[in-house]
Length: 510
Image 1: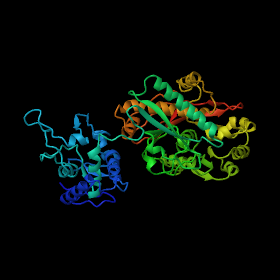
Image 2: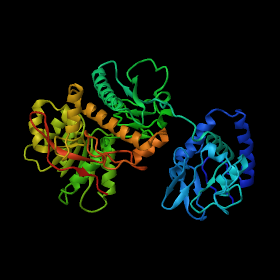
Image 3: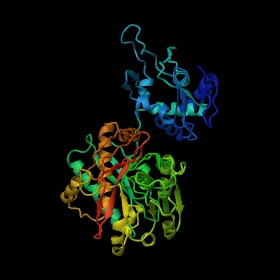
């Protein structure tokens, strides 16, 4: 069978030519004449379905019709991150670890279809590209036939040779090392120290109970505000990243699983394996639009005012998704000047900006305005006491964190942890995020099992559904979902600075 065509950035050869070329390259790799990154590139293909140029691998199932691409076509999606195999839905994905492939499998009974000789380089290529086993048996329709160029085939084979024997950074016989990038110097040092103390206390509590599968948890720190680069990057020292306040530069660290990052210097492109606990500005704005559109009168426009960032992008995306502006009744308007927004007689205003600009907006709207202003919680934290009273009458703040016991669960576990650990409740938003992030990571480590790897940890994180952290709303992740909390409360700011919920928990609806 010829491989399917269309793999971006790779020359896809006819099966026989690809086979010969890949075998030749694989033979070179066995003499260690290929660069050491080949197995790493093969791992990206195996675990995430990415070819050497970063494009998604493409494959056709054995029925010759169904196509797969990217992570859906990744070998690990069926055989597991360690290649040990799975059995789901009545379909067996056998053990393809390196040691298993190199060993002959004898028949368990006469005519056993799984009996086979040891795989060699040529038979492995035939299996990957053509779906044919070393005895000539055609694999079942669930086995993809991969469209790969010769180098990608060689990289995959190089990784298969070591599959099941490698150990990711931060994993040893007696310890699991988790890392955090925190501001440990400068004006944010107090926040960094409070987060470090929360993580350390949680790890120590787990270690007193025997660790996770007998391994101690260790914390590796990197000063995110230090001028000199670290001697070794966090990706070379830690299995995963937890509760960092700054991420490192884009690059190899994209492969480092990161949970609960609060990135004060956000990237244009989120890291591949970043699992966020907070929705972020775009999702908050979408929830605000969802709430506003359910209450607008037919002629009243929705106005976005202030900074043009994630808040504005989220508002535009949600308004477009809900058909705003395509009918005769409503429009989405964007204005830069807060005072000018009042002239449009809006039904609702989505505001993101500085406290002074919010004050100007409220003054321009005047008392008794029918317009409702929605703003992120971060704006409420910056309002001076003199502006709280007028804001309390007109503004609802979108808050993705737990507020008191409004969720029915509250912050009792987190509060008890602080008291038990002797930690002062200072930078509460950061401390609660660190507690929730560490709780999520520790649960994922348990689900990943004793043979934990980064790929296995990612899959364990993706399995979390409505997981209770004790310091956040329930968290859910998935292969296509990297934001664990997809909702918020709407709250009113009291004159004493407290936020009081005025709605229940609002999930972003389809």
